[in-house]
Length: 239
Image 1 (cartoon, rainbow, N blue to C red):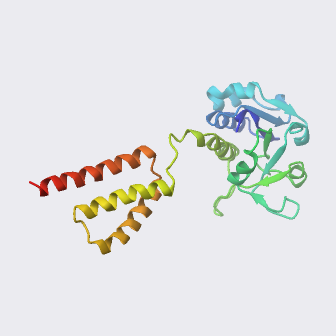
Image 2 (image 1 turned 30 degrees about the vertical axis):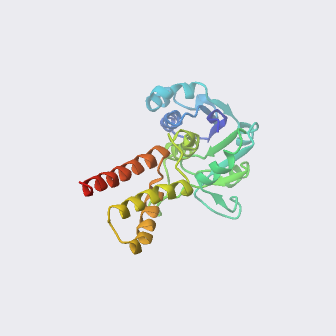
Image 3 (image 1 turned 45 degrees about the vertical axis):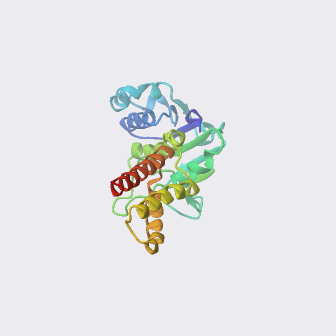
């Protein structure tokens, strides 16, 4: 997914410092497009920059609109964030990861809209969005700070872009079974268990190594260790 196609929309934010914190959260996750429903002169530039720190360029390049509809006119999907459910509030609300999974299939421009700090998105504002997204939180204190909510959403999108950079592809079970066979065959060779215990040992190693998500290199290294251990055992027994 191209993060340059992700748009963060703040609908009538009240606190200038929150905008600065939002800019920083966006920058942490490689997201740069900020749109605000409101007017630039309504906000204290200095207070924004205090919390934006080195992400002030996002504030400098922010665009301002008179409505959510105008701010998202060039977007394909528009998610309104809310913790409140209701008949007029999109019915089913998606979790952040569910929304990311759907929208990351294409490089179409996507917007995520966040409401006012006190009221959140109103029913009419949520109607301007195409889908509702909710961030689960404790019933003891369910309301999230604006920048925290933005960070959660942005992080999910950022993580989606990192899937190709895990460093390796875990081996499939078919390949893992070869490693397990190497382990159990060598354990049997050195007399670790009788033939009747091999099945249970095979299941043990298969289950535990599948959870480890081994790379090809790790699988080969394990095989080398057990091959060498069995070889040393046989060498000693022949002395």
